[in-house]
Image (cartoon, rainbow, N blue to C red; front, side, top):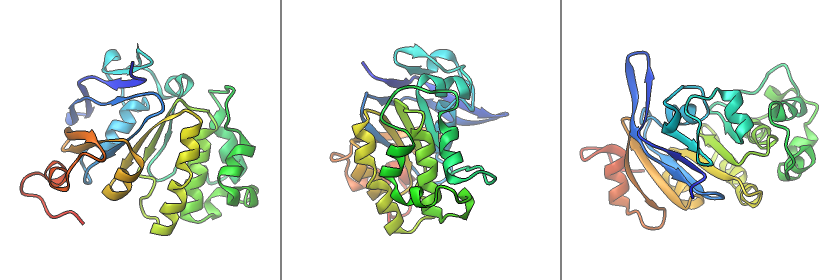
Length: 239
């Protein structure tokens, strides 16, 4: 039985429809990647899952229960946490305060606490009393990931965590993912970096214009198939 599923998921911003019948499945402990160009609907999909955008109850299923109409706090309480695009740290709080706020609304036993977050990202222990926004972009991303992990989620949503970061920083952040998977959490990664997505995920969904255009095992999808699904038949070449 899947841990998480969407069934014909749609999403609207006023009269504008952003998602058209999106179906994805995530098994317990699995890592999947959502790829696609800007405007493909990836962030809207994450916002829908996280309860920012309401939907029909059974359009989103978690642990075989409908959650499509639940609010963001209720989604978090169920065990779904998101690392949002742009990090969204609290500028008036220290690193440690930003981390601690992550378990508000869901305080459950699990492997993630301040000590284990600092073991995962040692630089954060050194900067724990610093304002979060005084850190580098990569360090701020570590805080955002740590904050989400503090709730000991069963499903972790990561929206564009490599965006704007140097390749060496992205490598260091993704090096923490095997440890995150050891906690038993399933992970959904939204990425524009196709090569990175294929490295960390067992399965990939490609989106274009609010629809899933391709899905399959990360080792099975050909470059040509990804190109067509990513850009369409008349798209540009992949980098």
